[in-house]
Image 1 (tube, one colour):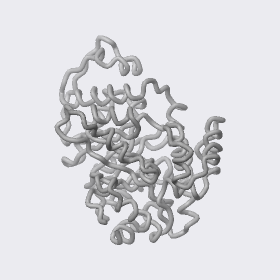
Image 2: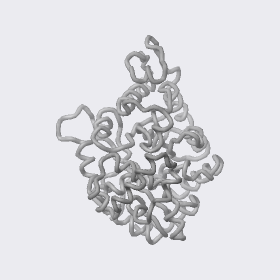
Image 3: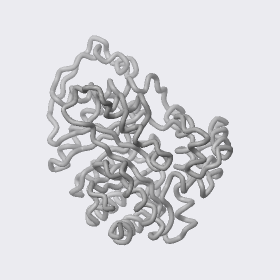
Image 4: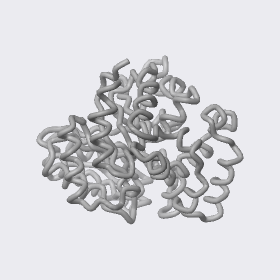
Length: 355
């Protein structure tokens, strides 16, 4: 079955840290030339700045850009609104897509305090949307933002310029609270790197039901559905399996902390006792790279479609054929593989035409 929605790519620049900004621009140019519709970039402290990278892409490449995902605890909301509006002046009218989430369970809380993450998300998106719409806001209407970013309680702010392209917000996350926040405050949902294990465990329709409950809603349209599908494509099987291991370690910890049960892990081919080893390693202070040494090939296969072109054709065909995936507006092929240029060409020229 063909997937008729958009196909985007995610550049995870903390994993693919070898690429400097000029090289990332070249990869975006390659992606546009291979007819991908959008480039998404992730947000990590200590790595190349997400918004500098997006601006660099936007000045050179005629392709939609997006954040997958940005973290509200990292950005003063006024500065955030300024950044997004400025980006729209570079996109020639193309949407700036803002995937936004609470941040990595394994990492963000080690870097900054993260009080009331879903209140932070709802206040941030409401505040930024008001600013982008030209409204003069009162800081006192956003108590968590005011406290967290040391804003003056009696202060006010209004943008001095207007966005030149649409800006849409997509909640990056899953679970009851995430779906409620998405339904109330966002344009849609970007189901991140947990999409594959959740799909394979039969849990995606539960999320769709929470996002679109049967009771009446104030929304004019249903939330848009987007999802990341993790891939690691390389002709060398060992390289394809090794590349995603740092992310897999984080993904397994996130799944466990958000209610993925032992039987769920077993249903996707992962031994629960091996997940416990990674969970304990993180709790004892292990870095992502250290925890990655505990990741097995079964764990990679539970969270990624990994291998050569033929393996990716088989895995993506199964995923695209699912009714859950057919409901998506966009599939974002994420993480890609150890050699981005090779992966982009293989996906575009060998894998996708076969689906």
